Image (cartoon, rainbow, N blue to C red):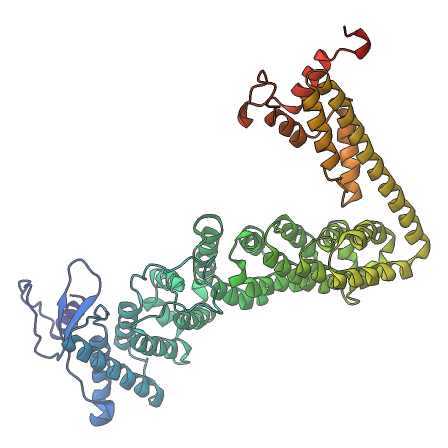
Length: 559
């Protein structure tokens, strides 16, 4: 057993003689000088508590004997036992005695000076902390995507009254000014730090809060472990982002990193830039970003406050991970974008003007109310986007004009329409001549879109004539479907221009694939020669048009 062996070593050093080797027994071993009786489990690293006796309080013993009593109490609290609802009365009584002993230790540390001067006390205290807090964590009860911290109750630790006292003792040890970092480094090794970081996966927020404070103090005091702590947290977050998507302590990690980034020296080291681009920004891609977005946004803004030249790669990375189908996540990204633009100088904003304003134009046309409202609020903000647009209106007005005008014709919400008209009024006040030019271009785009719709209808009519030569009823059905088909109105002029280029490269007689498949899938009941085929084996669009053209016979040449 660990503590028995340490005591034997201490007695060997004191007497200078090697004690006789005793046979190991499976029964309970009772020591002469100890009031603690425990049993060792060969398959476990901890000690299972079976019997414990309450030691006297520190106020009841003379001052010279209190250090020895302190060590005995720490050794007594090093024994742990599994906690459950079916605990035996003796085990429950032993745990109550252990809790009272830990409370006595906390009072003794608060009232006594130079408690941690003895190296034996330090070694025993670290062993006691490790034996109690390092344990297998229970299986998670629910996924992070389902768990809501505002409505759902987290799974709390059953043995928290004892664990809280152990964490209190450990925190008093770390923050004590009596501790020499060189001496503490001898007792707290890299394995201890690794196991401590792994405990951040606990579902109990109270334990994670204690761990956050303790790790922060360790980072501040043990300078030799700073790089190791950063690498370990970095690896944990990287594994969370790209592999597991399951870890409870990401928000606490980011809180610690927020203060760490604030202390980075300039110029930033490659290690810190690599953390920003490879670990911090990819955290935006996870689905459970709502659990730690506030802390993540703070860390990103800390980097920009250190070096404003990082705004361009940060904004481009944010746009790369921009959500397409998650509306709450898009609102969070818009809030973060506003925080970033507040810290952006005009010279840096000119580099990201085109992608940022294009994205805002797309968000303005969103049918989701919160996304459109947040984007329009950001555009109308005189301290953020509006201030930058005033200095670069020659490039900003052509980008924002078309989405805003489309929004006035297509959006369903009256509040969004009023915000849109306010934004257009702001743009018109910047440069009325350029605004009128954009209005003329917008009219031309609308006319082109209308002509494109008419051109598509003509193509469909021509294809209906081809089908009429084979089956009149099929041609009638196709004409009916063409008349009921909705007319597509493009939302952005760039999409309209792209469709024109695609249509110019297609054959003269072309049609929409969905309408053609409807014709093929719905044959006339009077034409049994037309056989139905599965969708997976249907010919492609170009093949159908080519076959129709080859089989087409002009009406004048028919018999």
